[in-house]
Length: 80
Image 1 (cartoon, rainbow, N blue to C red):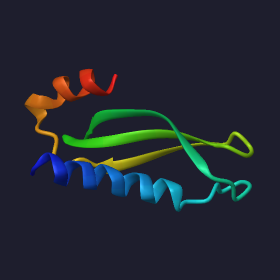
Image 2: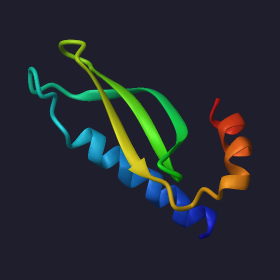
Image 3: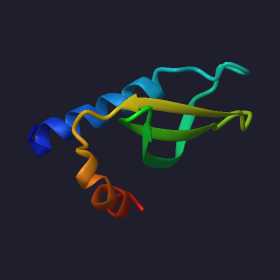
Image 4: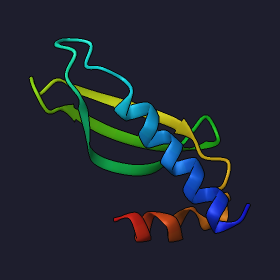
């Protein structure tokens, strides 16, 4: 996967977040924190979001096939 492919993949994750209304008030979610986690042996982009209207918190998990387990530490350092 090229950098361009990876960036398109991540961009699509934010489209999902932006197109998902708050389940409490219908407002828009804003990303607060993005991490890479291993869930059941699979790497995921985990994005903690908060509703800009009511403050409701929601976590989005997206499979991250572009993350090799050996490169996970490097990616975490870049994101943090």
